[in-house]
Length: 74
Image 1 (cartoon, one colour):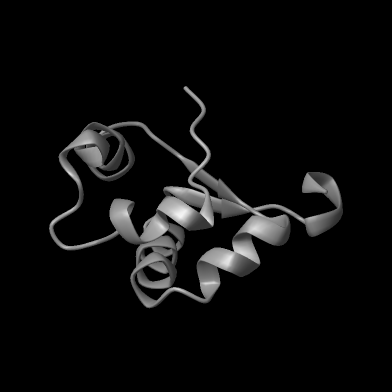
Image 2 (image 1 turned 180 degrees about the vertical axis):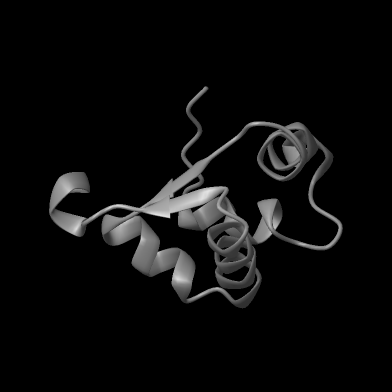
């Protein structure tokens, strides 16, 4: 599965509670075998949003996310 969380929707996805449409994706990332990949311009946009930044950092620390070089994404 591949999902791109655009910065325009990030506040809806990472809000507390999240929008119901995004709960399955968050469950997949947090409770199942999902993996978040971040990099490039979008990673910089998400880093500007507190909730998204905290979520991404938590996944990185848990080994459920990985950062790729900006050049590989762009």
